[in-house]
Length: 74
Image (cartoon, helix red, strand yellow):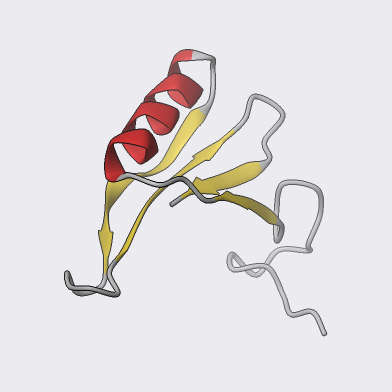
């Protein structure tokens, strides 16, 4: 099923949907986030660990493309 968008507003293109891209290193997370911002994207969360550091740590970054679509690279 679906739930409401995080901000409580109606789910629309760019709100309540997110593309997630898996890469194989933290350096690539940073490089992709930087490239997205350089290409006109907006920062939605700088590269870093979300939660606890450790063998199952989640390291990611978030941004919006110029059309407002939210993406995550992790």
